[in-house]
Image 1 (tube, rainbow, N blue to C red):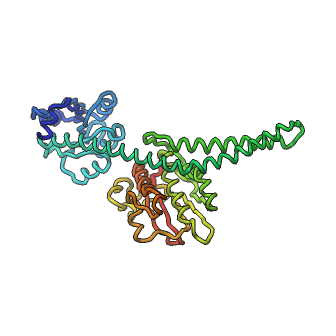
Image 2: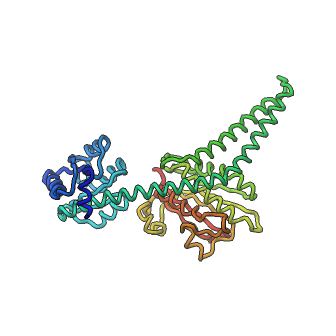
Amino acid sequence: MDASTDQSSRTPWRVLLVEDNPGDARLAMEYMREDPHFQVECDAVSSLGEGLDRVTEHHYDVVLLDLTLPDSTGFSTFEKFYAHASHLPIIVLSGQEDELLAREIVHHGGQDSMPKDLMSGPLMRRSIRHAIERKQIHEELRATQMQLIQAEKMESVGRLAAGVAHEVKNPLARIAMGLEYLDSGIDPEDPNVPIVIQRMEDAVQRAESIISGLLNYASNRVLGMEEIAPEALVRGALLLVDHELKAHSVEVEVVSDDPLPNIRVDKAKMEQALINLLTNAVHAMHDIDRQPKLRLRISTAELEDRHRNIGARTADHLRPGDRVVVIEINDAGKGISNESLGKIFDPFFTTKPTGAGTGLGLTVVRKIIDLHEGLITIENRQDAEGARASIYLKAVS
């Protein structure tokens, strides 16, 4: 049984056709309906605004989108529709065959691009069927990837918990000392009373920020983007690994450009990526003779062409000339061997002893960066011993 015959036993697919040319719209609907085994229900609108209203109010399985409409033209038509309805498979109907345009559409989340002058019934039906199937597979894969990210996160929560508990003990001890001092009797003229109370308040805020940070970090939720200052993101991650840094006597230096633009990220997931990279950097310096030192640099730059071509999987994320925020983590370890450098993002690859790591940490880090449409590179430093991890995220203009 072929796919189109199998589809006839299901509920008809709901198709939204956004096309302002009545002749092209009529022809597209005839192509969809000429095969009795291909069951569809099609709604047609003639403007981008009407299309956006329809997908807000009704359920559809696929969208056929013309790029030349009365209220929008060109590639921006697709961008606007995708920004509003990225959950739907979108097939672009173009006026002529344009391979570059088709590639751009697919790179930016569309499922297909179909030139109208080559359109036929079999081609349209196959494109619709495959678009729906590919989108379903993509969503299932994305759900699996999010589960992997959460599983790796919970493993790191376990590693962080002991350090967080230790960090909370210090402010609790300060509060206990303050209460003991006040319990001995309060002299209104005692100049130490305001100081003791202020220290207790500071301790409460410190404990609250540590615990809240861990709870937010551990929460399981879908990607929730928010605008945030890069410095605040880095400081939040450093707070959660503070005990690890102290335990290994690692000195941290944070250098940043001023001013810095904001970035749009899922704070908890990006903190997860930074915590993993920071922890790896600390472990890379555990047996060196000199003083362990981490140097974090936050800067802005225009993306260079050499970064544009880091793997086909991220080719559509950033473009040369894009203004980006760069977060660099520079360790002072022994660096990474050439043999390992090409494998560090491979699933289950690890240089740690058996049982000391799953080998999924950097795989998950790269997936988180991919979800943010950014780039990550890890390389040996040329200016000093050690390695450098660099995260590139598009700046909010």
